[in-house]
Amino acid sequence: MASQLEPRMQRSSDINSLFDAFTRLNVLVVGDVMIDRYIMGQVRRISPEAPVPVVEWQSQEDRLGGAANVALNIQAMGANVLLCSIIGEDEAGDNLLKLLPASQLSTKNILRSSTRKTSVKSRVLAQNQQLLRIDAEDTHDLDEAEQLLLLGQIRQTLDAQDIHAILFQDYNKGVLSYPVIRAILLEAIKRDIPTAVDPKDKNFWAYKHVTLFKPNLKEIRQQLPGSITPTPESLRQTAKAIVQKLENQITLITLSDKGLYINNQQQDLLIDTLPRQIADVCGAGDTVISVATLAMALGADLDTIATLSNLAGGQVCEKVGVVPVDRAQLQQECFKYLEVKINT
Image (cartoon, rainbow, N blue to C red):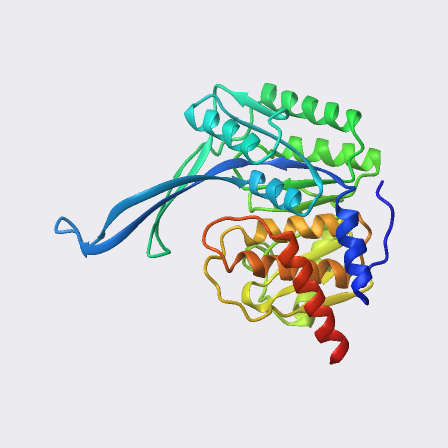
């Protein structure tokens, strides 16, 4: 297990110590990997065939998405990441296996299946505005043989290396089926490894005994009855309901432009977002769960987990497309945040 820090970011040295400590972490990321494809063009006219814009193609770019983007975020923070997933035996899968090493990510734990498509999300953009998204993917669960193959690879990885946290990145594309989730969580409990999840609706409540549970406000509203508002008392009751179902230790709820809420049953915090020039919110959740997992793995207090995650999620919203966090920029924003906090 990682050494326990007590970083409240009360001094600049605390921030430096925390960022240095990230480099000593090994994080296993399990979930749905995909390609985020961006088709860029320009719109000058409306089609005479239908009331839709005509996009004049200019360029196309493929980026790592889904759990692979989470891996990029963890790597960008200086930690060592091990990415485990299953993709298809198709052209998109071949492309993904080229994108991973190009980004200094290993393909060792990426398995392939002849019965699945590799997920590709194609976004059409003009003048930096998204006009359309086309998804080519399978969403059925892994079959029994694929589940056993994936779990065998994960156990082999856990046996071979000290893992300081396991992060589930669930996009409901079938890699994280209920049996896979439960088997990995049992392994983590047995090995005393903290876990974190960014859940989706299909297996939302499958993550019993996860350490850190991070839904967004929209997702939790779909799962619990009654009106949930971004206010301390409403969120406190929501966190209590989540703990009753999952027995998790930390609940982190992202609130879009309202910031985020965090609760560990002894303490809770509601943190506002900083003013930003928002360009694109895609991938912000990936960044939040990545940074929160790293801070959690180091034993950081709630204030530190929430502050780092909030700043990191806001940062990537200033950039077009799915991009990982900028570690140096985040560290500087932490210094500025601390300075403001001390002076107020």
